[in-house]
Length: 132
Image 1 (cartoon, one colour):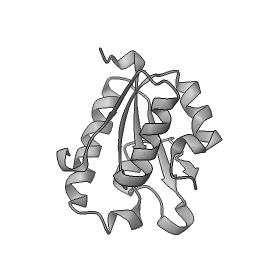
Image 2 (cartoon, helix red, strand yellow):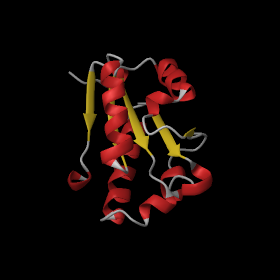
Image 3 (cartoon, one colour):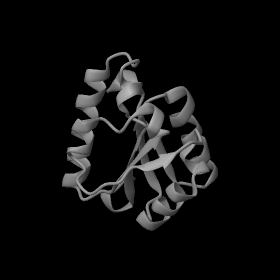
Image 4 (cartoon, helix red, strand yellow):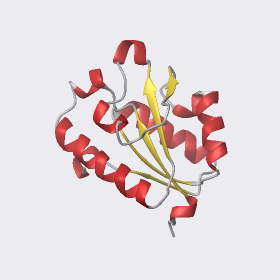
């Protein structure tokens, strides 16, 4: 069973330049904002990553506004698990149930899900873009 005390929301690479090329970006943005508000209300931590922010830009500003004080983990590896700073942030949260949402589902989201599964996260859920 998933519980707030064991869960973490991971937002992968929802960045300005990527958003321009994603179908239904507005719906995706609206629904991720709902997730952030819900998880914050339940006191569930939220981790945010950015793939090469110098080239792809920052996280969508509307999401960042809901996450004051949150510093996105910068990465150049497709899998978040390939970044030591991410792995340390994840370890500090001490959560094994991870809900993943993000862009580039076929690359960064997928490879992160596989990496986390290999790291023995107990429950791992990705939300397909079409469901948001």
